[in-house]
Image (cartoon, rainbow, N blue to C red):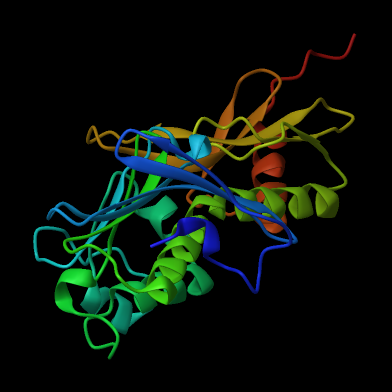
Length: 258
């Protein structure tokens, strides 16, 4: 299979490729983005793998598998998808935000065993780990169209932090606030700073630990004295942020009048 010939009706220029070990790294120039992907299609029995880096998700783990070793307790509101995939993840809230309906649709199309074009050993499982997104099938891929579908699914999953960043920017505009940072990451590098007469409030994400010892990512609102109000969501909401700011302002210790 000639990887340079994929997406001929969609790319706006020639693809470029280079072999790196058992992978071929290919760059496909689309009108709105460049897909930079590594492909391994081993005809010797190691199956097919499609992968691309996603540094904003470094530190997060997600696996979608065709077996029962994962959990189905992550509620996506998509029964058909969750019948297809068992889900294992380090953070259920982030998994829900990443697996929006459009991304689930692309993933399900490449992994659903009832699709007439999918043999069981050519149904792809997906993993996010160590800052990479990958899809893997047990058999080598001999369909150009199927490989294109998988590349688009991996690309959609890897670009989800861009979608989350766009939501944070819209929320900053709604709050009349300043946005700092370029990229949404699990480390909270994207921040919203809300100025007020009483001081600034910073909205970002962080790891929240419970009294029981568990932890998970959540949104936090911090005042300039370091006090924090947590919001149990990774999708920013202007109304909830305003309520958190009001809560912090109400508990602020003020110097007595002289």
